[in-house]
Length: 308
Image 1: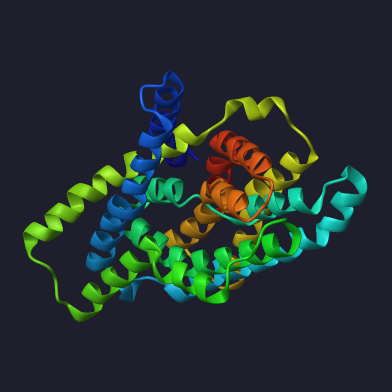
Image 2: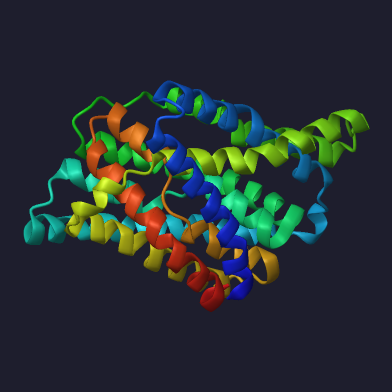
């Protein structure tokens, strides 16, 4: 458990710094949004390209890892949908609010996962997180959009628009570029690789500062069954599902740890944007993200210790 805690403490300190800086008003909202775009579209792709280009894929069980994560997501999606009538009957949770519970239960924060993987397993961990990105991101986006289209109040994007967004996703694009370099052996000049490494080092801090800036601690004063149910499903049940499928698929070593990590991190900040765009309950989504991020301080190292 201590390695996970040791890896988590610096991550928490950077997140806390982002939150404090944001609350002091030292950086305003527009500047944070620009900083987030820089991390998302430039810095994180650099660390993914660099690590995938250099990793030995022959030693990585990427098919088993991908299958473990896909089965975990699909199972959690089915469980959450099955719980909707009970949540509505017992707690009066409306379909609109359910969409935020659903997103909170299945999605993951790639910034936190990458930072933790780098701290715990280095280049191998980052490469395996890239595998997780390819397996999870398209499926999570499709499931989230389908549920919001069914239960929220906004208009759903077309299938062509969804496909376009997936193809343009910088994490997926950078994974494809890294794979092309790795598999063809056409390595860029050393100076280019050094530049990628330098920008990649900045990515982890930038992403975590953005996570901290997005936290709304005032949300913790408004707990309720919707908040509790989504958090329980995400931080407790999701890692347990991943551990079960990892065992069934004989996943071991670093890949097993990545499966637990990818399912134990809090939900994605992009969930809030999607909820706002498609008529979901963006306010509840912000509350879920804040509570999950804070509780993950405890649940994430415990999950890695007990299940990883």
